[in-house]
Image (cartoon, rainbow, N blue to C red; front, side):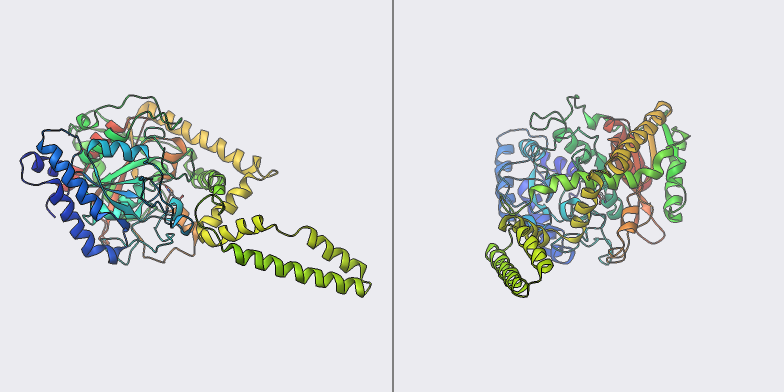
Amino acid sequence: MKHTTFADARRALARGETSCESLVSSFLEVIEADNERLNIFLSVDAGGALRRARDLDARLARGERLPLAGMVVAVKDVLCIKDRRVTCASRMLENFTSLYDATAIERLREAGAVFIGKTNCDEFAMGSSNENSYFGPVRNPLDPDYVPGGSSGGSAAAVAAGMCHAALGTDTGGSIRQPAAFCGVMGLKPTYGRVSRHGLVAYASSFDVIGPLARSAEDLAAVLGVIAGRDPWDATSAPVEVPDYGAALTGSVRGLRVGLPAEYFGEGLDEGIRARIEAQVERLREGGATIHDVSLPHTKYGIAAYYVLTTAEASSNLARYDGVRYGYRADEEAVRRELREETQALEAALRAAEAAGDDARAAEVRARLASRDTVLTRLYAQTRTEGFGDEVKRRIMLGTYALSSGYYDAYYGKAQRVRTLIRRDFDRAFEDVDVILTPATPTPPFRLGSKIDDPLAMYLNDIYTVTANLAGLPGLVVPVGAHPGGFPVGLQLLGRPFDEARLLGLGDAVARAAHE
Ligand code: GLN
């Protein structure tokens, strides 16, 4: 594959050495060769992408200038592209077609990007391994027996496997950063509110953010510059000016104050990862950055607070999938038949109890007859039973419990207070340092199937990533060389709100140093 970064492709396009069409064709060839084995794309729009590329070539020939002309982008299948399916990797939306473009999609399209297909992910973005997809797991392109991470595993794997220049993912608790680390690519979680969520199927609305995955900071900067900014369709999108992110890639780290939080280097951190990260810290010191110890004392409550708050929000967001308005619907005739049979059985039991003069039994059966499901309530239940996978159901139940009266203060209210404390930890640390540097994950990628029966072990994998979402901060993951086991190690940089430019500048320097 020749032009794996868009920056390279753009230069080649400018020199007339390639065309948008040939860029798309060569990515399609890789997809054709490897997608079946790796299960990365849920749908590939070969015809549409080629037509679009030819149109772009014609426009470029006429002298039109488009900042992302010929950038081939894979899109996580929780984002809406008009007239294309958006499944959220769920049976619930298996046949659902988007009615409109997400704002991020619309902006990329206007800038000249080509959408090559929709990528597999964990169902409704809930997971850390991509094993929760209704359409089967994604395999890590570096070793197909291992997970690619999740939930944007398909997007990270698509970039790693050379199937696109860049991919869009979403990050609610690490879903861009953790798979980027597991697949050895770069992934940026922007500040909450930096990118419009219009057209993103909601998981946990006060956490969700859309961001890019790519092979270089330059490409991440190019995508972010286009998708960032206020959008009237999303009231939580921030009215904050969008800087020229590309201009931040100066290569210099001199004078930068980098904080290392002790809480992210403690027990549970794989030694191979620790060694790699520490080596990078040394490089930064040699480059003129100053290294400082910082403390984020409430880190240990991050996972608990995250899984209370996000499941609560998810239980509310996912209430809309009831089989009535759209999405999967259980067999209505079967539901009616089942209810009819149940009623007949209860009526027979009532007659028998009355004939036997068993008043207690008769009263019990009458009560059951009175509280029978209606067709509609049974249809809701059956639809949701069949349409959602186990992890999604687990989270709806956890979230419903956390929000129920009597438990609300003990769980949801308390988790909200922890969220504030975690944000304050960061505010305090950022008084002394410009960025915070941590490992992205406590362990290298794990084998497919090895954690699927242990949700708690799976949740603990998110320990270094969820805090940025609790606090709403930007985070960037950069691959920094190999673990002794062979997989790449991901280094995470966390920044102040809306300081993505600094993260990209530093991330670029780290990535270059790691490749020397
Ligand atoms: N692994 C985390 C979870 O399962 C993060 C998911 C995400 O960021 N979408 O919730």
